[in-house]
Length: 323
Image (tube, rainbow, N blue to C red):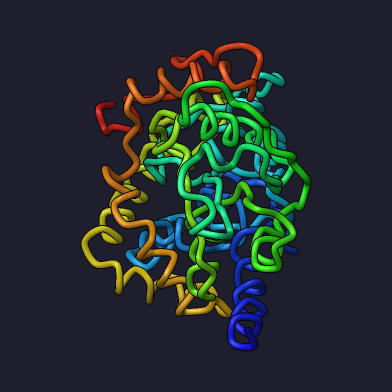
């Protein structure tokens, strides 16, 4: 138990640095002639490896860390950033609230959300979650993730789980037994729990109920895209090359990110990158069929009220290198 507790303490610090909005400064407004500004979704972690690989290869890009994970839509609309990395669900929510944002590429090609159970032996299938206590972060997509996983069990849902809000505290909540399971990101919390020796079982949402769709997308505003499409296309191309390098040589890409971001834990970053496996392939591409299924999913599970306008929300030509 002492080894696990010590490991959890170290890994929790790494996760807080790598998965939660930190104390980054608000980016300055982009100016004509300056490098395009890209705002990350969270503090740097393995999903951003291709961005830092692109920078190491000489990409003309100014990468900024947000003060909070909700900063991106505001900074884009205020003209204080050219592009941003966003969760695809946040893109749908922002557009429903009136933000004219457009995804021009996909960084991670599959969902990263999961329901993670803390006792592998006691929770073998989604049906075992019925009657359990499940911790949720409070993100709008959490209910959808849990509902999709439960629906994958089929039949009557029976005794529904009790949900409790735990924020981004899934690691300690699961290890201490305060909850039976939690919604979390398998590439971050899932990795940390495994590295600490906690016997978890993961129900990744696209394996249990949800369609496959890109979790993280590269976003700009319609106004900026229309005004400077060539510049945005250049960034998309540089990032496509960067993520291809992660696929071809993950060890070199890992070294690039460690060099660029002082303070990252090498073992944690390497474990996250290894867990992501083929999730970057094909780099930056957006599959219309997947997006159409995603658009149905976000309405069916209540993430948004109206089905997203796929053609307005995604530039498939730019993402797929056909324009």
